[in-house]
Image (spheres, rainbow, N blue to C red):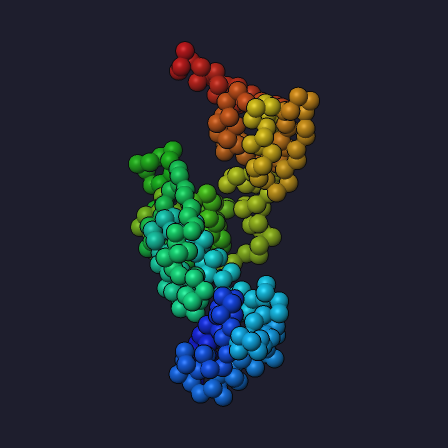
Amino acid sequence: MSGHIVLERYLWFDQQVHLHLYPNARTLADRFEISPRTAQRCIDFLRDRLQAPLEYNAAKKGYFYGQPSFQLPFTQVHQHEILALLVAKNLLSQSAGGFISRAIDQFGKRLLTQTEDLGLTAEHLDQAFSAQWNTFAPSPAETFRKVVDALLKKRLLSFNYCSPQQPGDPTHRQVEPHHLQHYLGSWVLLGRCRERQAWRKFFLSRISSLKVEKTVFAPLPPEDWQAQIEGGFGIFQGSELVPVRLSFAPARAPWIREQHWHPEQVFEELPGGGLVLGFPVADFREVKLKILQFGADVEVLEPQELREEVAREIEVMGKIYK
């Protein structure tokens, strides 16, 4: 007999117990059109093999849980799996042209068929969770699919890449894909560029004329490229990290205290309620933009080079708004 049919019996019986309806072998048999003997074997399996704390109430002529908080172990796993899938679907639904969310939908529907009796329907979960990204660069579904295919099969990629600095002048690249990173809603490929003979990052949204070549390459070990995706603040990484210290005004400090900027961030409390935030940075481009969004509520304490870059930017902005 199909396993999911038997599982449905356990789920239904467990639900009836939690609803204090005192089910028994007869109600289980009637619900699933099975013999009372088969129904009793299911109840015995719940109690003896799945460790359900079932107790019989003679007055109610049915079962209840001696420990009301008990949950079936496979029910807990299914709930966690489905919640994880749904959150992933919402987080990634737009960033790959719907490719990921469609795949998650297909897998999620198979899981949900086992737990609808518990209220875990696709509609209910979809209404309960959402995610919203802004200022990200979505990538076409076909681009995402091809990049993933080449990454997993260790195949060379060739494509045209258009940088924001040269929007009308794309360059042709041959790249050995090593890692695909989801960063603030955008997909970024880390690869060894054969033209530059160096590690480069490519936003999938800027790739065109993409082709998965037949050439198979030997990926380099993670220790050769790990520093390109982690270490400092933001998307721009490197082997040399510089400590940054930012002083936030008392009015802004409560928001900063609850934020996660970097795994190695350090807080220093200041008299009067101010706050100093410290973390490592490999490149000033992104952190400078982050600093500027806080206006006069933040001051760069160090390094001096970053402080001077921010000061020059503010001077230019002052001339625009003067």
